[in-house]
Image (cartoon, rainbow, N blue to C red; front, top):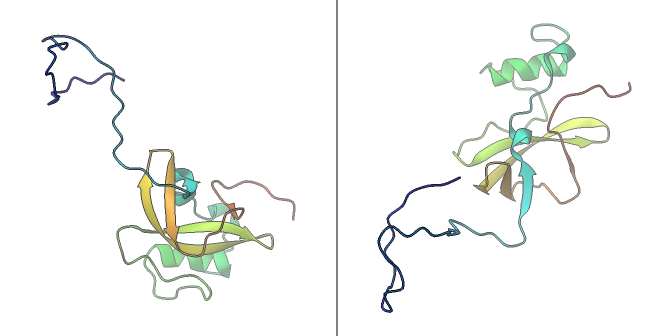
Length: 133
């Protein structure tokens, strides 16, 4: 991508002239040794085809909870209360398990997870699909 920008730079040797073009890499934020997950993981919700009824079964209760119903399924984390908290689903013993995590910077494709119990190597669910039953 190309953007026009006005920059203040030291030009003591007068090597830069008006109208010249340049290539610049601007680092907005940097995080070392970070645990990152695909942004699609934050959009995952258990698929509607797994619902056994409007509010029956785990997935039905989960769907009701995400719509704001009071009967939150047992074992789910509390809804996020801070703007940088999100829910991630991981595969644990062959079943989805929800984690409330605190996020950090994102590059648009991957987001840093700062805290919340997620560990390197966990199978983060990024989309629904068929799994042998």
